[in-house]
Length: 299
Ligand code: CP
Ligand code: NVA
Image (cartoon, rainbow, N blue to C red; front, side, top):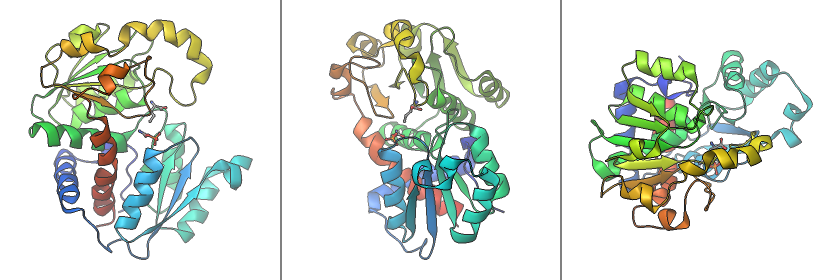
């Protein structure tokens, strides 16, 4: 059976927990292997990327595979070749697709029509690879995720949705503070609730961070939503992660941000550069978490 990773919910709980441990072990060992030797991956990126692209290309090469980077600009994707045709053609050449795109349905269509694994490298709805690195970072810092209070401050975007899916998989205690009209996807909220996730939705950032061990945020304007930028700024100002907000969290709390960050918007310079900031480990962990994921998909 082809193992896709379009959402974290493509994993079961035990697999998710095992992958985090494996990623930590791979990091400790500086893991290299030839297990993907002869395998070639097409990285199709319809949006900009620094971390995801480089960490995937590096992860693939650390495991002995190779990667081709594609954008719509220089391929027929930009000239509306149907996705189902692209999926079938690429399946004849390469062994896996790593795709950053807009609609989640694009990933689903590629998975349906191709016969090779498809990995979600970010969609408007979810950013599951990032969350594997974020959960790995929590595990590294705190050891046990059981009941770990984690705050999400800001937009109910792809990252917030993926945090909800994380709470559906692993026993963290998630609190999301989002402004009115910027809540996470209601279908994902319901699915997380149905799966017994431990989470709270509030408008109050102070309530979300109270005693939290990790305080997370992300850009106020995600890729593809730039038209809204001016209006969003005034709505999100109360949701900036600053020293006062961090002071309301646990004294050992870490700050997380998937990056890129906008200092003076969603986070202050003092917070992102503080000793509490775990963002560089978090970014590094993309590499290790994706190595563990690729090993699982191709094992
Ligand atoms: N966090 C993240 O996905 O970064 P990039 O957009 O640089 O890939
Ligand atoms: N929410 C952001 C994450 C970037 C890594 C975006 O989609 O632009």
